[in-house]
Length: 167
Image (tube, rainbow, N blue to C red; front, side, top):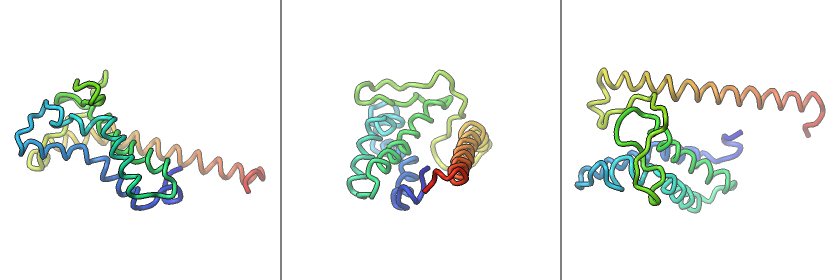
């Protein structure tokens, strides 16, 4: 199980930031970068390659005790953003395989309501629809998964302790 016993607080916090970092690409609009460009919204910053490179560089900078676990955690934190954006019902899709392909792709099913760009648009009826959709399709299954893993690992530890196999 992950947590402070496996990865440090700085790595955990970095992973939380990394889960949102791909959307920093909207800054490109201020510099004339079009939505559909390679470096536009949901482009290169949403790719698995970008997630891997940034995770490796950051792991090298942070130098955690458990290098591989921390690197994998950071990669998954950032990669999850592009993967979840593929499940949304709007936009152009995510360039998950950039730089091999600039193609923006969606998953076969797209149940998550696409989030509006900008805080003003998010604080609206549409924003509430997006929150409801994310609670339904992301947060509820995630909490169920985490709860299940926690209960199984706790039960397994208790079983090992009772059977005398735990040291």
